[in-house]
Image (tube, rainbow, N blue to C red; front, side):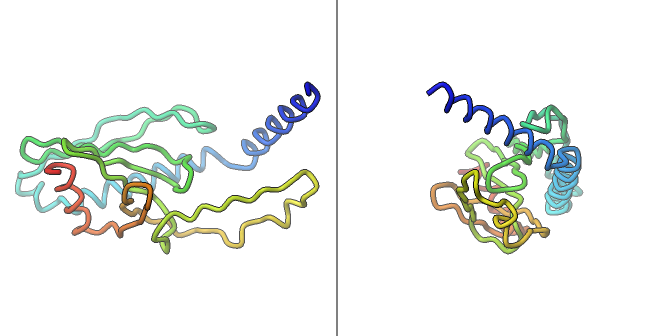
Length: 180
């Protein structure tokens, strides 16, 4: 039993080392920051008319995040004030299962999730592949590589669906987290 456990530990350790070497985490972090800036700019654009009329206030606060492989880093989190209601956009991270990034919009009456997902997706598409030591990894490469990512609104689990992130859907989401 001890030998099989030691083999198991060694395989896990080797897999972790290969993951660390195969992904440029510094590049992933910079891409995440850029995508987060795009998200914030889109929100600010949707609110611009109300900010100009001084009906809505916006500010950025620094948020510290820690993610496996990436480590600790800081990002700018957007805070929006509408009347007496504060709506906080909380960046969750980029090293996630099923999405390339996530921002939670928190208000007094709830939370709405924004996810960075493939542009053509309407729901999560998670695939699991099991292989053994004798499998040739070259035969298990993904069929395609997704290069076009976009922010979408995610419905709550268990039946998650993605809604296009547009001005009207954004406004509806804000009203939901403020008024319930």
